Image (cartoon, rainbow, N blue to C red; front, side, top):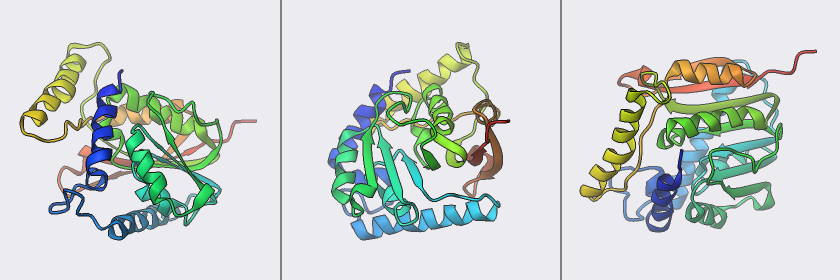
Length: 248
């Protein structure tokens, strides 16, 4: 599955209005975000997520964390206040360039551009925590599924992944339904957004049954599943899973 259209979209957004591209709040387009307020939203989010991990009873080693879909580093910078080292990964070089400009934690935070549907730039079992929010939903499902597998490859045994992805009906690879899905979600949606003068951002989902299977097949245990949003709570889910230690 080509990620070139996703990359092209976010390269342009990273050049034109990167903070609004991350958090599209009304009235803050055209570079009106105050950077301090923007990064404060990241601090609040990470504090809430780490509190959630503690609440579900998982011990978390605070060595190295991964921010997948880091963009300009909104969450990477917040994670650096709680972990010894942080890596941020994004598909857009223009976003990563801005993230490096915003970095206030020196070499403790590293940023990487990754344009392929895997995380082979990162070593296996090298992270204690993986976090991703409002990122997988912009990636075609086949590639997003591969990234989820990679989350657990790069986690150390006992490491924790918390990630969000919308839920929807199952798609059988190669089926007519899957082909129609990509026609609508990638090609027609992008065309319609261009016609309306908006960035051609894609929105995708992965069926909850598939995500559960990915976690299980990756040698991890699903700890919790949380519906997000006020409407149709089960249409957008946050997953929390721990990588199991290998059996003796």
